Amino acid sequence: MQITVSHTSNQEPLSLAELGWSAFFDDQLDRVDAGLAPMRVATVHRARVTAESQSGPIKLNLPNRANTVDYAVGDWVLVDPNTRIPVRRLERKTTLQRRTEGGQSPQLIAANVDTLFIVTSCNEDLNVARLERYLALANESGTTPVIILTKADQVADNAPWRDQVLGLQRGLKVVALDATAPEAALALAPWCATGQTVALVGSSGVGKSSLLNTLSEKAPDEAQLTGSIRESDAKGRHTTTSRSLHRIAGGGWVIDTPGIRTLHASDLSVGLDLVFVEIAELAPECRFRDCTHDHEPGCAVQAAVAVGGIDPERLERWRKLGNENRTNTPVLSGPRGNKQTKASSKRSCNPK
Ligand SMILES: Nc1nc2c(ncn2[C@@H]2O[C@H](COP(=O)(O)OP(=O)(O)OP(=O)(O)O)[C@@H](O)[C@H]2O)c(=O)[nH]1
Ligand SMILES: [Zn+2]
Image (cartoon, rainbow, N blue to C red; front, side, top):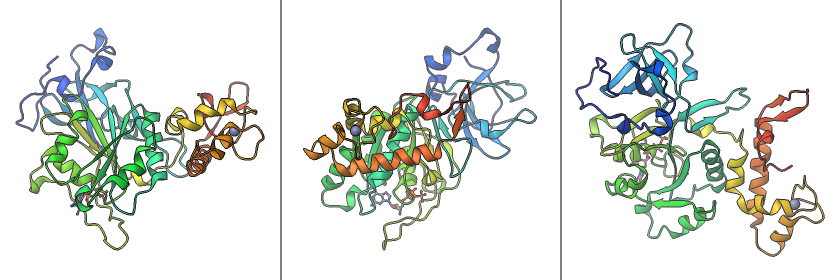
């Protein structure tokens, strides 16, 4: 499908596949959609949404009373090429969302992300509990997590950092690199092929902007701001201000999402099970169905801790994250007035 839309860019037209289109979206098209142009949401502001069309970036005209919070960077929308009004948003393949503290409805971070790059650096600031949160978020949203250890060039041996993160989830891929070096793009190429979409999450100062610039081969004058890091406490300044969709040189797309530091564990169920799979697998063997793996007799998890099969610190972090999840996930009223949480209505791994 190629529908011409007047635009501001001189770039070569992109195929839909280059924009990230796949059979998943094609299957959602109806005959009535003929004449509409599929486009990908690139930026979402309070009253303004822009998109990447096949012929370049364009500003969308929102219908009256449309709420921009309904759109996420990475969304596919079908746009009327004459009015530039998005007529329909396609169902999302993956949805990254977060709930701010006390927030009733989750806030969209990004949509249709294939791989979540969880960025952390080889310094003393590495926080496994935070990485487990990001992993649970990635799993829950349906994206594949990859841990990126930046600043590998600043340590003689990155093995101690690699060892800390490899065990955080079964089959986890970990890549150590220098985010500022062109070779970083090569190391990440397996996840950045044409049509693939990745997103970057991680604390301030770990190298997300640097990685973004390296992946997009941005010239210095158009590069994202890269902030400086305070040497004293290894904590960075927050410098990134607008989320957006960037083209990866010779391949897919990268979404940069600020504000992820205020991420809270909420709405997690299978996402948590996949991170703490060693606990989830043993839980059915506990004597009590609602075992909290704490003080109960016949607890298979505590038995595994006793013989060194389960790391007690992991169990403690699982408990904290599960508690945080339950606290932050609003309780919904069930059909007959019985209360149930969204998380517990799916297969749950919360401390029961
Ligand atoms: N040597 C080296 N320096 C790096 C690497 N990654 C980032 N830096 C430097 O660390 C500082 C912070 O990097 P940024 O890319 O701004 O970090 P960020 O994660 O985008 O930070 P926020 O925008 O605050 O979220 C900059 O001075 C970078 O040049 C790396 O892999 N090696
Ligand atoms: Zn138990």
